[in-house]
Amino acid sequence: MNDLKFKVFDPEYDRLADVISIDLRAGTVTYFMEVRADSESGITMEVGDFLKPLTAVKLLMATGLKDRHGLEIFEGDILKKDNGMKGVVEYDHGQFIAKLKPAQTVEYEVWNGHVFDILELAGNRYTDPELV
Image 1 (tube, rainbow, N blue to C red):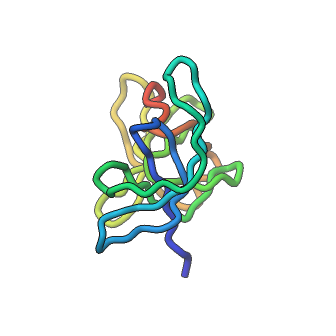
Image 2: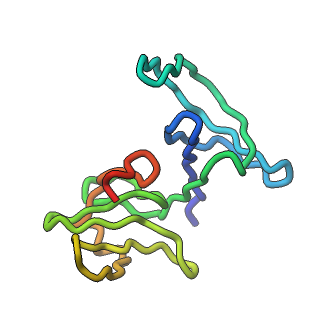
């Protein structure tokens, strides 16, 4: 059995980070993040473990699958095909799905392990919303 893996999106820093632990009783998540100085946003350098309420962040679960380059796929990731079709990975009715759609057409669902040798990560819906 595979261990559950999570990432977290922290909207305060507009960053994804690796989850260290989740405390459901306390309703908190601990994660490691490195935030670099950015003169435009005014964010200063912070490195270390962050502890936040679950309500302040978005948890993203690993699917257990990898894209064609071997990168692990998480909920919220944007996948793309060579033909330009893109879709966001979502958890729906007990399974992960990617609704792939080209511009101006009806979307359809794809989610089989064998499909991922033709899909690659393009970004994440939270850090790269312009790709959706």
